Amino acid sequence: MTDYSQYPQYPQDGPGKYVPQGTPAGYGYHPPGPQFPPGPQYGPPPENNLVWGILATVMCCQPLGIVSIVKASQVNSLWAQGRFDAARKAADDARKFAVWSAATFVVIAVAVTLFYVIVFIVSMSSSGY
Image 1: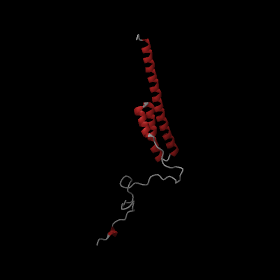
Image 2: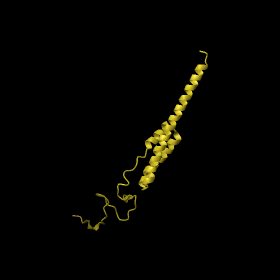
Image 3: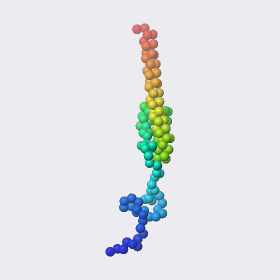
Image 4: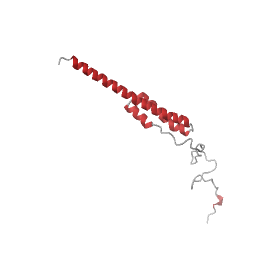
């Protein structure tokens, strides 16, 4: 029978995983993440509205859609840093810019359609038929 008492004993980090003392982070040992005080005031992270930002960029007004994507990409990192109010504001801004992009697209589409209808009517009335 082997005598295991001669081998060093290591603190256990999870079931069946032994980590030597002084092991730097990144070599199998990862210290626990930031701890936030418990409480219902934080709740789940807000929806980042990234899908709406991408759709607004591809289908509607690109400048406002890009701003929406940038704001949406900030939500999860702000939430992970513990900046909950800033994360909620970034999520609201992402949604706001996506809606503005869609509204801008609708206004421009209506204006262009109206322009072509007027041009068509004027050209038909001035023709000799």
